[in-house]
Amino acid sequence: MGLGGSKRTEPSGKNKVTTQSNCKVTLECMGHNFMKIPKFLPDWFFVKEKMSSLFVDEDGDIAHEFYYETFNDENNSSKLVRRVDNLKPLGIIKYSIPRLRSDSPFIIWEARDG
Picture 1 (cartoon, rainbow, N blue to C red):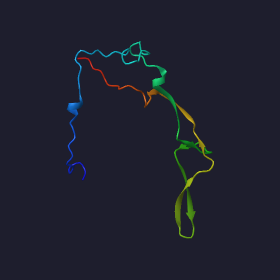
Picture 2: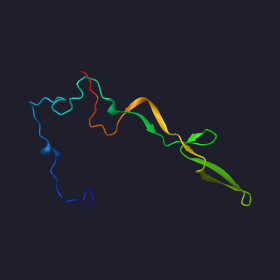
Picture 3: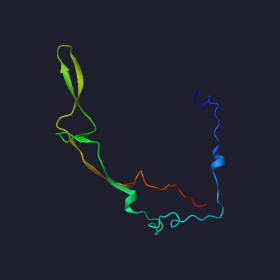
Picture 4: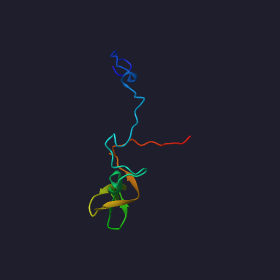
C-alpha cells in the first residue's frame, strides 16, 4: 500500500513532453491581444481591497476574536469566555500596494539578464 508498495507502473513525464523548435510564442497567437503595451497589466489582474476578517468592539479595539475573564469565587479560579456580542465587522480594507489576483490566468516568473 502507498507509494513504496505499489506494483503499478506509470509512464514517466518525459514521454508526454513534446517540444517545437521553430515556434515563436506571442500574445496574439494565444488570444491575449489586450496586452499590447509591454510591462502593462489591466486593472482586472490586481486586487486593491478585500473584506476583512477583523472585528471592532465598543472600545475601538480591533481583533479576530475577543475574550473576557470571569472569576469564580467559590473555587478561586478564572475562566476565559469568548465574547460575541457588541462586535462589528471591520469591513473593507484597502491595500496600499495592489496585489495580484489568485485566479489570474498567467504564469509569472522572474526574468534575469545575463
